[in-house]
Image 1: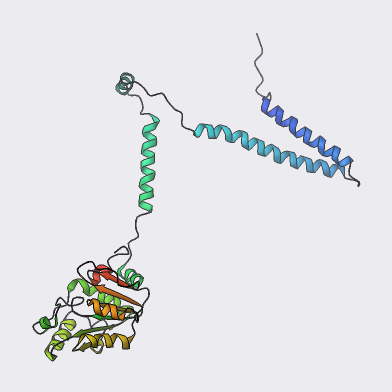
Image 2: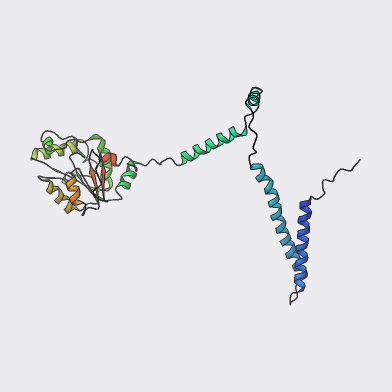
Length: 281
């Protein structure tokens, strides 16, 4: 009976590695003999031993890594016929690896989608981002803060838009805000101030009645803005926006209809609260 191979016998790869190491050591020894100065053979032996050990570790790492990489590669299986796949399903055979791979890809895609979901910013962060850290803001009242859109309507009533109140109060927390409007009589001024007071605009401390300015003409509003020199001006009148574009750093044109951008420093939105509704608005 033929004797079985001993488990301790070296494989061809191990023999080649040992032979390579031995050749390396012999070469170093021959090279040391040619040097013009004396070299301690004992030190050389220690050095070559360390070098041989390093080479051994590198080769061992490569030998161990190759099978692992091969195992990671998915094996291609022949596509089973309809009859064979049906019989396997009926006999309770485990699903193919393609099913697990597709489910794994799906979970990975879900994780990526969840990771790249837009971050929900607070209103304070949105206001600071949109205003580019501006510290002074002038804003028209009609059509922006108030529901009314003409001075004639203010002679009858004044109503603060509830949807804009939160944004306005947030702006007043870190900006010096001035509200302004053209009116036709003193009674309109009283109605506006009363509506702002009832809405709680003056209770936060960020806005006072002295910063609500009134004038009798549209040019008067332009004069107010030029004197105050704000970082932002908010208005519904395209002519005023155009005239102030050269003097004001940023402007926001409030218009229910989509308008062409008058200048690079002029933005547009359907409402003030929509402008601060998100970074993409």
